Length: 316
Image (cartoon, rainbow, N blue to C red):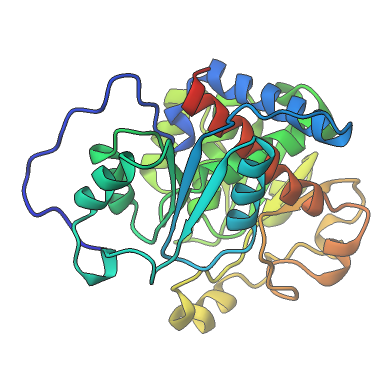
């Protein structure tokens, strides 16, 4: 994407609620979204209509490939009675040099909400700065807050009161981990993060967690992290765009795979945001076994995002 062509940044449109990071919500708003997500899931299961965004349009701007993000947003918008427009890399003028601010203002005249899945978080921030409609982060290099909403919904379904849950993150301190850590801080989940040295959460994330609630416990020992965990979460070691680091990262993460050896002696549940590199960060038996909450977690992307879209468009 292109960058700013000048230093002028407009004031946000009145009452526009963007969702670029999970802590763009207050704790009360976050809990309200989770409650609404649970309601939508129940309504869908019972065949009850919930066309709360009838006549509304969602623009979906994608720089990165996607399975879950595209299908969950598009299907969810249909269930809400609205319409979604997919805009891939070849469908806009951004790759042909149009400034982000021009695209933001043009889309704002056509649609009611924009979801963007971009490489650079700064590009998303610029899109939001110039849009007059809510902008939702579908994933950037810094954050994946919609995934966190689904994660928290899944944990709540499994364990109930989030403030009574002990969780572990085992793996890379990437964008998913950073958003999850903030979500845990906001909801009172007791989180331990285990990463190899040099792959931990950013200082900014740890400081934000402290401001939001509590910092996670940090360790380099995956066995220590999972010892008392109700649920343990992992993600790929080599993220999209890091393929040239594969050999180095796979070596660094030796011993961090979620498998029965690491989890034996407990009934710890397992989560993964997908797609998974089976045999690297998690083995096949664990994904397919009784510990797995992964498919429930994947489905909940749709329900949580429906709740978020309704909230940012119509208000909390």
